[in-house]
Image (tube, rainbow, N blue to C red):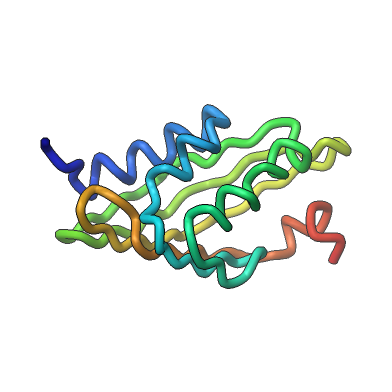
Length: 126
């Protein structure tokens, strides 16, 4: 059985996110994954992440996260991307993002994302 490379995992992460396939997207993460998410905070465990993502379609009418620059070094990757989204209330979100990934065994074990939170004010209510 072949294990996906870090680049394949990262490419699949964005493909599934842009397709809105959140359950399959969650399957990219290890059962004991850890995520430091700019808006949601510290998230531990794949099933916690899966529960969190169930509400995602209720927040966004459309969502796109397009990689602009990808750097892979072994089992680590950093991706600079651009989020373009529309909330279910009709507010636009445009944001530059940087995600950091650590992978092992074909799964994401750690991920963090970093961006300005102001463009997400319509989502967070801040």
